[in-house]
Length: 401
Image (cartoon, rainbow, N blue to C red; front, side, top):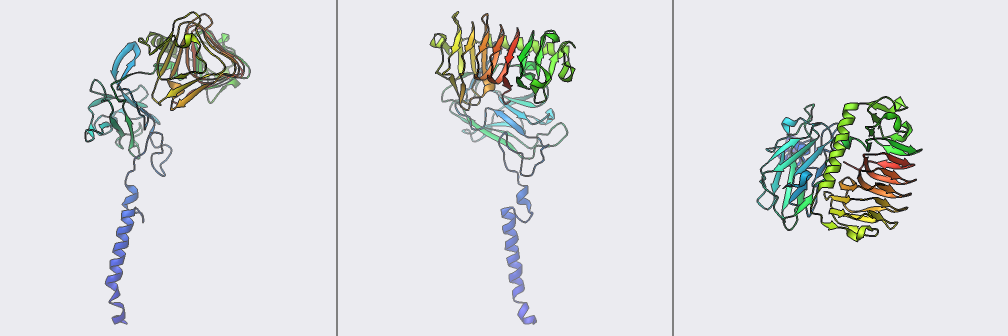
């Protein structure tokens, strides 16, 4: 029996060794392969089996795969500056762990992946990191890759489970794009007015509304404020305490932010398009850029609607000196990867913005003279006005961040 068994022992040992090596190489058998980090893109789960509480990056700008990205940006005050990158996290982060060395990095893929020098800043809530390159502009016709490494930790000390990596490509020539209008504290509200917000029941506002006027002047009811929203007011005169938040100081801050946003949108100069269609723009396809209309007739979108098309990071600013009218049954269609959060309608005139019935509207309205919506219209965006905002059985949904 001993003579029969002994020749096979070395062979059995050798085969077991080969099997073990194979399992390790494939990540099987509970070996180290399944612990090797895999990259994820913004908005993806942190890793297979990661807890929902694990921090990650919900979105980025430029978006993953974006093309034709401007090399410089014009922002508030018409300041032209280098294109910045942002990463929006799923929760508050520890700012000490978000640095341009080893955590939030940008590589120029045509220069052997060399890190681009820059600085990283966090917003007030530590949820958005901004990378500002040190150069005057990004290179044209160039592929870049941004990375948030696993050195990034949330406020509780938990690191993101996998690196978040995304790439984008700049425009073929040096270009200046419009930066989005900064809504500041007003961005906490789906609707904000300096006087009143009224509604013909039932409307559906998916988020908080705010008014710097006397609370009793706002008649939209608590059942019409959904998705966990409340009514923010400067006083206790709003008639239903069930959804009332009294916070005069923060309402005042939001009112100031709204005013600054209107001033910003109104003050951008050197438009890409002036008096397009003599103010009648129904049926048109609108590329990214700054549009301006100076005529007393204002701007009208008829029932053929318009299409706004471009990339996820492109911005549209419409400066309308007079009234803005959207006729019944019109639809604003988003083409390409255009996002409602990057579309800004700055409206003057006496009547302000008047949205007809059964309209499907997209974008942020910044009005000097009021906003009125007729029955059945929906808005994917936000409504801001100095005078009153009037709803009539409408649905208002904030855009994705």
